[in-house]
Image (cartoon, rainbow, N blue to C red; front, top):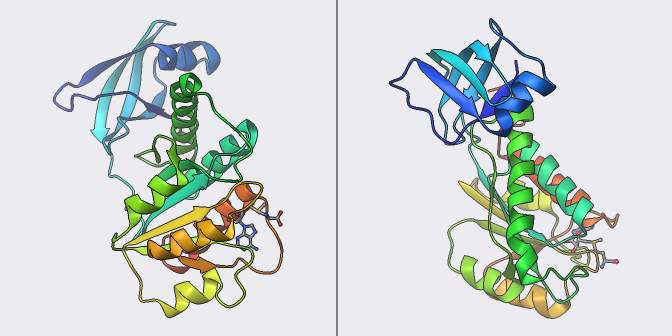
Length: 249
Ligand code: SAM
């Protein structure tokens, strides 16, 4: 069943009006009309079965038939710190990790980040990334889309997480003794996992040291060097597999 997001749903009302781009999408692109049903969500956890009463390009009126239970959250909250990548790769990382249930993505710039984003372009980029997270949420039936934070410089990012109660991992292809799989299996399960994935050029040794000072454990994903976006998807999938909800519970 199709899913759509609106900013707010007044649960006391039985009928609801959808306007803006979602109305156009429902009526013009998908050609849905009276009698069709979909799931309406507010992005904060509320979900309703909605029945279309009338549909036009500017307004779709629905009856909220019944509230639907929110799918249970993963037992582990996953935060992905993703180095800023070229536009399509960044979009890909956000789309796929969102599908896999990442809770929050924190983009950062570091020494070897290739992309330089002008300050005035940043709000537009963040809006675009949030739209990707939202459409990923629609696709994967998550009631709450992944959060996308503002861009931070690497130094501020590691300081932010210093002292945070979580398993904090910096993915580093030069790490020779610890791998992510072993780390997850030997650590007692924690409620929060924070993974940091570097840019195309990787992390410098100094950055890995700074991350270690902030409590991050360097870990390998094996002998192959993965592209940054592949590493990001792998981390989220592996954590969901070992500690999370990549299974039927
Ligand atoms: N600088 C490296 C090189 O050119 O050899 C490659 C960096 S890799 C393309 C980008 C990021 O993906 C790294 O900073 C790291 O976080 C992650 N990554 C890729 N392969 C990895 C591996 N085998 N183990 C751990 N992290 C990996």
